[in-house]
Length: 142
Image (cartoon, rainbow, N blue to C red):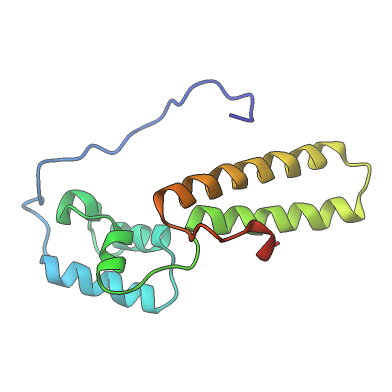
């Protein structure tokens, strides 16, 4: 949206029908592994990468029919903020620190504005879907 890229070319994951026959782990083992990796402090995306690379699980959605966030929330584990929003907040803080020390860096000033607009859009979406409390405010974090 904010860049000069054209299109979304690239490979896409093909979801098959159900669990692959070659998969050696059962459903309960996969859920236990997801919970253990979360206890180690890994985020949802890192858990997915570990499952794919180390355990040979193509994805929890085609195998179990649930995403990693759904598995964690069913077991009583809920993040304070969604992962994409928290990463944008960290990125915004880094750019903000840079622009405070480099006042004439106009490209980063524009980047700061673009990151803020993305965060505001995400906050509106998450409030609408119920992932964030309606009274939650972005100024609490910044």
